[in-house]
Image 1 (cartoon, helix red, strand yellow):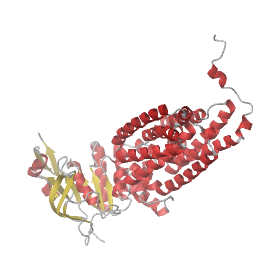
Image 2: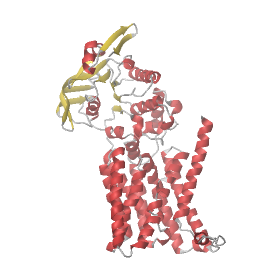
Image 3: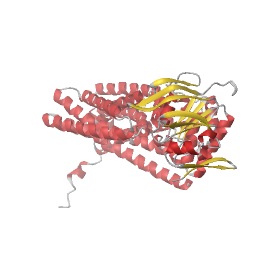
Image 4: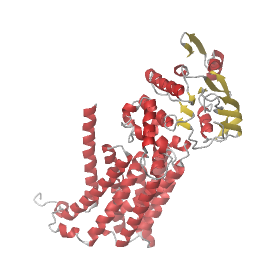
Length: 287
Length: 258
């Protein structure tokens, strides 16, 4: 009985034709789409960490779930459903949770309700099982050409808006009271950031899925922050780390016929572990 | 403008403020002269921080008038530097001291772009003025409470303000670090033409700097020279606890006794 390897292990095998697979159209779109999302997520990730929005990011991904299943129910594009629910969720969290302590509770409450809706919608639909799987775990290999165009447009808008608001947003994130007194529109920036975050999450959910979203939105920024504290360097690093994780992850997925979400978040996690070990050692030798 | 021809830093005229439908204080009529170093004292909930917010323009008056540095208060007045209470609590562990100070200069600016050389020099000067140059490149979370407070003051100072507002700058600091911060404040007050308004619970460590006080008692703010604020009867009434003032050769010292 122990002679046969479990079926799950047998499914993971080296694919000798992986180089050819990488050249396929769907793989090229996956690479381009994944890198675009990694860039957008890397830019936003720094602010997710300094604003302590990690839980909000996690929640928004789950809030998108009923959006996706609801869209399938109504015969609408999944991206539209994700975007509508993530944006509404982002606005609600930004509005109700002005202070960090309030935000945790508001976020959790909205998250709970949204997940309930997701269960309802997915039980109502007959065709939704595949959508549920792809929303939960991502489906980078199924990115369509028009989806890629949407990703490109969103990334350009995100990077442009972030370049415009980066400095006041940093000020409002780190010293909200001082920034408020200095005339920075702290509240409006907070809401704007939640909308931008909703946009990134709408894209990232389609790459790595709701359950693995952290690996692309938070982990690269956290890793970059272990390496440097200069804001511009952190953004550059987290963008690069995310892009490398996506590219190498796709290569590994082609080589071993894995769903790409896993190698992407696994590489992201390994990078974080490595940075943690190096920074711990550095700190120990300094003290 | 030299110290001699400088106008008052703050004028309240029949001022009153409400918060959440409740009157915080009223009948505020006082003048804080330019260049003064003024402590704001009063029991918890008497509206000390609210007074700072009135000055900052983030809390409108319910009644009366207020003039700050000769004009109506307005948010974003670059002539005011502000260090809120619990400054470091919102900062997190991901930012260097130097970058925070730079935000005091450029944080309101839209768009990207590096610091100009003259701005970099001003950041360095502010860090120097508070004795924070040696740890300017370290992360805030790695600094002690006293060092973090120095960085906070440097951020408020970097815009070269005419009025510096500090909310409980000595809270949660041990005696030695309290003295260091007071030394920093004294240096700033002596070397720059700046009016200092500092909210505090304990007057003792600040006495070497202070020239006057605003005390909030029975729902009204009053202004007095520091010699008249450090008064047994006043402080006892203010805090609702017996306070004894002991005068020493070094200067005034107030003590609390149960």
